[in-house]
Amino acid sequence: MTDPGVRLAAVFDVLGPLYRRGVRAVEQEGGMPVGVRAVLDALAGRGATTVPGLARTLTLSRQFVQRSVDDAADRGWVRTRENPAHRRSVLVELTASGEQVLGEVRDGERRELAALESDLGAHLDPGDLDACLRVLRALSARLVDHPT
Image 1 (cartoon, helix red, strand yellow):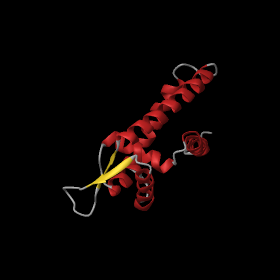
Image 2 (tube, one colour):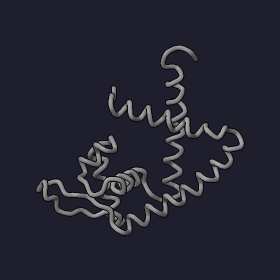
Image 3 (cartoon, helix red, strand yellow):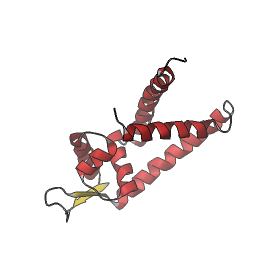
Image 4 (cartoon, helix red, strand yellow):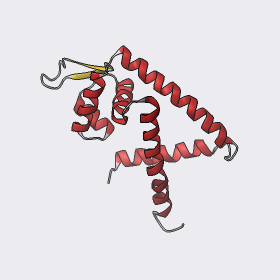
């Protein structure tokens, strides 16, 4: 695997199915659609914002994000309020219920991931996960700065 791009292509070959399995697990275990989870995570990280702002942050279509916001609002996890900076584009924010359910989902994931990490520890060197994170963060930053 010395040809340019082959190793990086192999990374994406592993990440795609891994991501899809992770998404399915989140939806099955937590009963929360992945789009709603993404919206809640983004709002928890950046605070109230507009649907177009969420779409840019999540690199998803505005329509998909709007459907996810609507779903989360129906569940009582987000609410909208007037946006003083823009009359027609409301702000979306987490509710206390949304913060609580997100915390519960994250806690459950951490418990599951702690068990998995412990199991992997028998097969990996201690720095392997740290190296993996460094590579994925560098790749993510590069793709954000230069998407094509």
